[in-house]
Image (cartoon, rainbow, N blue to C red):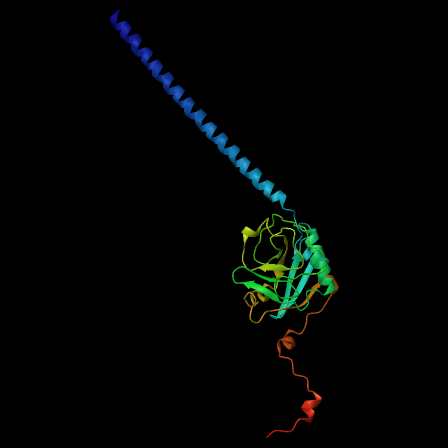
Length: 247
């Protein structure tokens, strides 16, 4: 009888151990499944968030498919034409302001009055002081999710978010801190080297100028940069003709 009881006890111990191992395996499996489910849910959440951000940024056409009236040319005194695609899809009122002033010839001859190395080149002030603008009313902010990358055209403003008027700047290097704080309305797709050549300073000692601003639909030819770069000859006056001849 004693031997039978010992045998039954060992059998019971084995069964209990087997059951415990089975429960442990089930627990590990459940924990693993729970972790995988949590990771999958997290991944889906991150993907949904990223998709949401991408969906919030409207699609814009590439330069070759853009409306020609949304291609801005800036012919600079640094020696060439800068081609910029404007984005009415993200900043319709600011784009319309730039186009209106361009058609008026407002930007022709205006200097780059504030140019900071590693940051941006700013222009659009007819007084060249950074405090001027056009006679048109200010434009309400159209902040958007488009990032400020190299070549971005963005609208300058004062402390008031709704104070943009005529001044704009072109970014030399990415500045994501400007996103959602300044209205991004376009980007350079050709001729960035002429922007890079703009003299630095606030204001520069010898500032570069916008010789001519135009829209692609205006079909304006580029100026003779070489001729403009040469110093103008002084006009000969009557007094010069009557002056005594020196030795």
